[in-house]
Structure formats: structure tokens, C-alpha cells
Image 1 (spheres, rainbow, N blue to C red):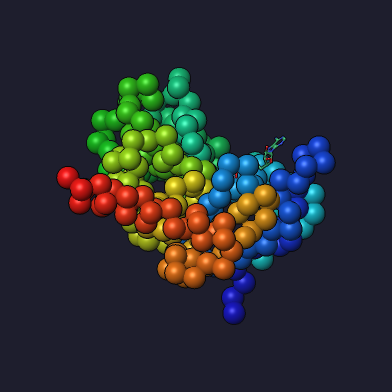
Image 2 (tube, rainbow, N blue to C red; image 1 turned 90 degrees about the vertical axis):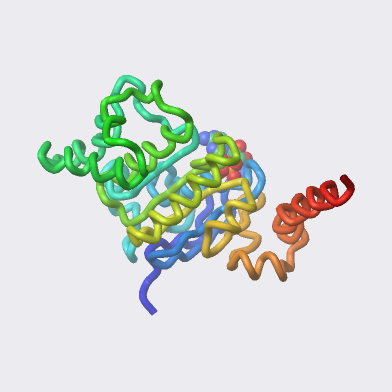
Length: 256
Ligand code: ADP
Ligand code: MG
């Protein structure tokens, strides 16, 4: 079997004696879409950041394409990995075009390569070309998040790391952007690791769900298997939550 594109191998990380990650191992094959779920503080963000070296583990190793990520300087590594986080972090004083061009410029792309790439990315995230000249303050939350995705994709990464990318959006926009991103993932052949606290989003978008609690991986399986046969009671309760909500709504409707 080919080596996984991303391998997190027995990784632990503590902050001031408290374990944020406790012996976490995950292997992610190229092309997969994996969701990391779990309550706040369970170690999802820390896990994600060990992949692009925003955090170095105390123990264990992370490998990308079989090569330890620690072999490469962090900034260089990160130019090859897409990263989208909650709140997006667009530079407010830069236009949409300049925001998207940040990584290509760092990589030394020629300006005549960058301009068509910006146009292509605006098409890819379904925004009009004249948005290129706007500043982030003139965009809706959903539009900003689309630009965040475009910026992360600018230098054609194979891997996308997303930390609650749609968490701050209204539910309608959130579902629309989630579906649009999943279509991009498939079209571009990306490998995506997405942190979300929304179990419905994880079930509907991901090929595989990793449930974390207290810095450990509690479960790691397909949405279908986790919905039907999770052994751990916490995992079972978490996975049952979307259907329970839907059942309550259905019961309410039946009473009218
Ligand atoms: P999640 O993303 O699942 O909410 P995190 O990975 O952000 O969880 O955090 C895991 C644990 O590590 C939490 O208990 C958090 O308080 C702690 N932690 C994360 N980052 C730091 C930090 N820079 N300094 C101290 N503690 C931290
Ligand atoms: Mg987090």
C-alpha cells in the first residue's frame, strides 16, 4: 500500500504540564476529506497545527508524503499547504486580489502568472471578477470566507487544512459554502482535513470522521459506521445529536 499523504504518528503535546494531545495517530490517504470533531478544548486545532508546523509536537512525528515535516523550515512548508481558519484573517488593508496573491508573491511568481491565477480563483469560488479590487470590509461574511478559500488555494496546494472555516456563518450560507467547498475538493483532487464542531456538517461533507476528546482520538471511521455502530458512549451521543434534533423538529411539526 502507498504511504499515506499525511501521517500523524504517536504525537503528544503539552502546555505547562497539561496534555493537549495524548498519543494521537492518524493516517490520511491522498484525496480524502477528513473531519475532526469533538468538544471545545479536545485538541482539534492543535492536531491541525502539527501538520503545518504552527505547532511542533513534544513526542512523535508528523510526515507529509513520507517525509517528516520537521525536515523543512515552517514558513517554507506552510507555503505548500492551504490553511483556512475561522475569522479568515484577510489583511484589511489589502484588496481581495492582493490578499489572494500573498503566497504566490512569497513564492516569487511572476506578475503575469499571478493576475490570471487571481481571475481563475475568483471563478473557482464563484465570485465576480470585479471583487478583485474590493477591500475585505466591503464583503459579506460568506464572501470573505470564499476569499479565504481562494487565498489558501492560490499556490495550488495538495493539502488543505481548515479550522472551523464556516463556523461563524449563518446556517444557510454555511451549508452552501460547505457543499461548494466539497465540490472544489473533488474537482481539484485535494486532501482536506477540516475541524468542525458541527456533527451534521462532518457527516454530510467528510469521507471519514475523527472524534477527539481530551487530546485523544476516540473514534475514526466513516460517517455511516459512526452513525450506526459507535462503541464509545460519548461518540454515540455526539453522532446521534443531528438526528435527535431533526426528530424533535419533526415531532413539533406533527403537533401543529
Ligand atoms: P480545540 O481546537 O479542540 O478546541 P485546542 O487544540 O485548541 O482544542 O486545545 C487543546 C487544549 O490545549 C485545550 O485545553 C487548550 O486550552 C490547550 N491549549 C491550546 N493552545 C494552547 C496554548 N498556546 N497555551 C496553553 N494551552 C493551550
Ligand atoms: Mg479549535
